[in-house]
Length: 461
Image: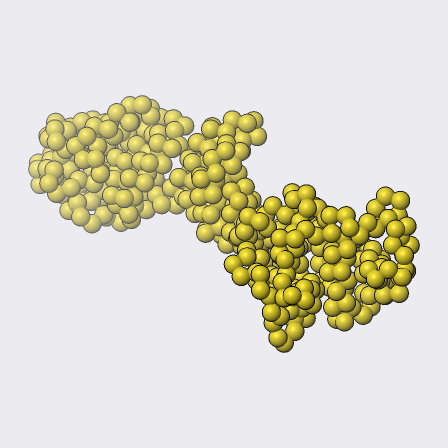
């Protein structure tokens, strides 16, 4: 509590001192009215004494103000009102008396009358802290916590050292935020998206450092189809709490929906660092694969839909999916190839040729636009299996000695060993009637599946 004082600059420490000062002032003016007895404990210790600024101070008005405040602290609001009214009669501009009348009305639990008096004081000084604090109390008693909070914050802005008010503001902020969050969650559960967004906005205004509020708002934004706001709020949640895996996953999901694969991969990886999980690792890998795919030439992107793939497309598939194996297996010298300069797949063609996975023809051509048949795919697969077996002999046990039967390819056929290894390893499959069909063209879908199985063997341990 702030007690009245004589010089209007330093508050007195006890009610006894107040009484002495007031008595001296009254004696100086020749006043004869009785002084109230100082209470053992003030009845309204939380009220902020309406101190009079020097520019509106009048000695007589100050006397009435201080005496009235003593009456108020004994609970005698009628006597207090007489003194505060007398102060106003001494000087109509003495707005501290209006604030004091507001506190007197507040003591009588007449919040509406109190607000009227506080507003009159604030009309003369909009930053008058005692009136703002009192109005906050009155608004709170009327169950207007948001308006009360604004009034309390205004009082603190005007006078930061008002005793006890800052802790009340923090409690009120927390209580208001809790109510807003409850309302927001209820609205979200009921599908009232815009109501939920408004409620979360109010909660954030009351508690702007709470990361979970931004995360929950981002989820609501996402449901509303507002990807821009969703991403903004999810990123803010991560900024406030980089260790919140849920915010990181939500951010990754929003990036994924926007096809920002690399950023999604980074967010999934960050979430996996905070809370390791195989699913997060898989998502990060998937996002990086999609990012790599998007950077590919159009000829590569259309492989899976192609009815027949070309040698250039097969080289690209092998080069992308077996990149590490090819780097380890490549020869010391590059083969001479005369027909791939400027070709979109030239780097991968060189890679598979140097590793001996696909052959360059005797005339030094690769024929990148030639169609791929099953015999061509089988030879490439067989060569890759040889490289895999060199690094992991145990993995080769199931295909090294296998002798599968094909109704259309005899064991003595030149291409039988390659076909046998490709089928025994599970990379390729037999067709109708147990046939292999060496000359059948290879579709993009068939090639993608086969190279995928080959990659799995190359990366198995």
